[in-house]
Every structure is written in structure tokens, then in C-alpha cells.
Length: 269
Image (cartoon, rainbow, N blue to C red; front, side, top):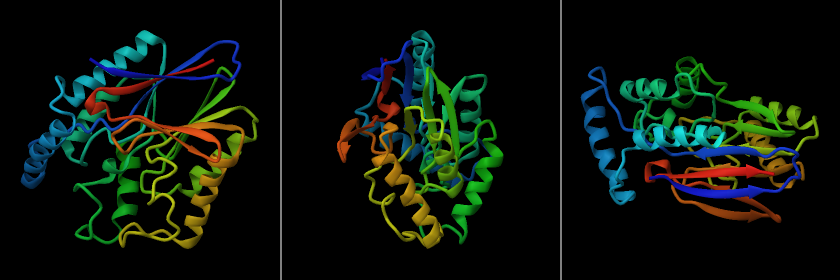
């Protein structure tokens, strides 16, 4: 059974808007085409999430399908903020494609969609980050992974990619362009605004190469998300726990992992 957190945002809309936010599903699938070490890794990772979720009664895939059905029942837009699968295996990519087929949803990736291993480690080849960005955009071409905006009920609903711990310049430029319509704006991403890596000003990892200029652009986005009154709030995942936090008088929201059955129903009124 889903653990549904309910959040209400009061913006004075004529007609309420509902959104179901899910994040951190961490499906662990392999295919016979995956490397033997990846097949063994996925067996280990299933155990990791079972222990963290205290052995939930359903698999991540079952929770995902239940959440999709719940969103339809509620008449809510489904917004997914990454880590749908745990490692970039052929089995996981195939399962991801099956799960999103025919569904009306918004999606922004998490760091795990970019990973062949558990973390972006120094064992990965040089240029790993750029290679995976290109590969994902080719494989998951159902979405614009960097930025999407839907204007619903007079509100900008935005997905903005920060999965590699920075906002790409394309994302920032599209975000700033969208704000020109003057509408209240709600932003969904994977990493919370207070995440330490997201707030760094230099490359933290040898193989995810970010220039000083790119970091400055990313920090410009952070500043606007925090300071602009037009930005109502942000919803993120990443930490597998649900919590609210405040920055400069504005409340932001983290939704817990769906592999634990947690999701958030947002009603904008």
C-alpha cells in the first residue's frame, strides 16, 4: 500500500491542479545481455533496498505501477524525478521503457540513470559524464531530459535536470525564458537545493568535467530558485526520506523513495 504524503499549495487558482510526485524507485533488473558482474551487482542491490525499506511487501516495480494507477484515479499529473532504476543495465533500460510506454508524465533523471556502477567512481573511463549524457538522450528520447515546462491552471510546472550535481546552461536558459510569462512556478528536480555537491563551485569528480563558467551558470539557477518570488517551491528526491526545509523564508520539499512505497500528492488551489 502506498504511503501518500499530502501537500497543499495555496495560490488562489480558479480550478485546483493535482500532481503526484514520485522519485527514487530503484528498479533492479538485468537481461541475459548484461555483463555477469552487473547481474551479480543487481542481486546485491535488491537486498540493499529491501533492508533500507524494511522488507516492503511490494517490489519497486509494483509500487511504481500502483503509483501510476493512483495518479490516474486522482486526476493528477505524474511527475518523476529520477533514479527510476538503480544502475544503467540493459535490463533496467528495457523495464523503464515498458513502464513509461503510453503514460502521460513528466520526467527528470537522477544520478543513477547515468551510472553503470553504484557511484561515479574513478574506475570509470575519462569523459564518462559527457558520454552518458549523450547516450541517455539517445536511449530515453521520449523526454527532454534537461528541461520541460507545462503550464496548467495558470502555473508553470517545470522539470529541470540537476542529476549530475549542476544545472546545464540549456536548462538555466530555458528556465529563465519561461519565467518571462510571469506565472507562479513550481520546479521538480532530483537533487535538493541544499545538497552539498549541487552547491559546490568546482568540479568534484575527475570524470564529470565542469568548467568554472558552467558552475557559475548553475549557481545562477540556484539563486533564482531560492530568491525569485515567482518560484513558489521545489520538489526533489535523492535522499530517500521525506522532509521539508527552508531557505530564505521559502519552504522546499523532499519526497521519500518510492521503493519504500512513499509518494507525494500535491494539490495546488
